[in-house]
Structures are given as structure tokens and as C-alpha cells.
Length: 251
Image (cartoon, rainbow, N blue to C red; front, side, top):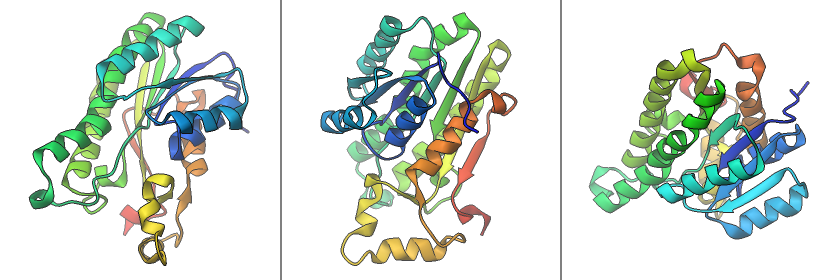
């Protein structure tokens, strides 16, 4: 049975598609007020049309820029007197580029979007959460944060760093009512991975064959895990990284 998230306020970044959109939809279905943040204005409009709910509030912005986290918290303050959950889901891939093919500009871009954006949202949300003695962060890592081969050098570095950041965040503030954990998805069928399905889908088929579960997961499966990790049922789960990878890292 899904926990009731009524009267809870949730931020979801990267909410215009994929895992972020699925998280936003699931939280709204469970009764939460959701602030959905993304650079993709059209994607957010589609989310609005699909949810058709007064519980959804959208913000177009680049989460790698400090002003977006500030605007997000301003919107939270406008619509609610509390903030319960932050899902730092926004991210981009790096085309599996090794070091010799990765420019410094590429490196900075990936770390800005995938890592710095999470830090900026944490910094913006923490004061409100600490004042209310409660708050949950669900940060999006990846199997690329646990093993090599899930991305290129920049993506893998960013996802490893997210796991370290999340552990330290939880250790620093667990005694003040803050809880922070990571999710580490493997092969999830989302628009971000559309290139794997291009043409005859050879890469997608190969990934499925190499995954012990022999399939890709859906964004909704990751969203279901998110709601559990964010719920009171998971209140004693602190500072960990939970794989949802069909057995990939168990090999």
C-alpha cells in the first residue's frame, strides 16, 4: 500500500521526462504537493497536462545555476510553510567518453549538471528543513557511482561524488532530523537512454542480455522505490546507496 503523502511538499528536479516525471506523478497520486523543476518547458507542460492537478507547480530553470535553487525555494515558501522531500534527479550523460575524448568544458558541464546542481539544491533546502527538524533527500546516483563502465569519466566521477556527498550530508545532519540517501539505477528505459534503442536497438538488446534480470526497468519502478525511501517506513535508512539495476553490480 502506498504511503499517504498528503500535506507534504516535494521538490523534483529533472521532472520533465523519465525518472523525474515518474516521481512527480507518483507523489501527486499519493497526495503530495510537487514543485517540478526542469529546463524543458515543453516537457513540463506535458507533465501538467498529464497530471491535471492543482498539486503540481512547475518551474523552468537550469538546476546547475544557483538562481534556480533560490527560485525553487521561493516557490516553496509561496505555496507551503514546509518542505519535506527533495528528489535531486536531474542529470545528463557524457556519451561514455574516456579521458582523452573529454574536454575540460565537457567535464565541467557534466559535473555542473549532475553534481553541483544537487549541492546547490541541498544548500537551498537545508535551512528550511533544519528549522522544521525534518527533511528527506533522495539523490540520484547510478550504478556508475558504484562501478566503472556505466558512463564516461565525467559521468562516473560525478555519480561517485554524489554518493560521497550524500553520506556526508546524512552524517552531518541526521541528528537534526535530516535523512539523505541515494538511488543507483542501472538500465532504465527513459528518453535519456534513447540512443541505446536507436536503429535496430542493438545496444539496448546487449544491455538487457548483460543484465541478470534480462530486461530494462521502467522509470515508474524507480519512482516506486523513491516513494518508499522518502516515506516514514524508511525512517531508519540513512546515508546509503540503493541499487535498482536488475542485478548488474552483483555479477
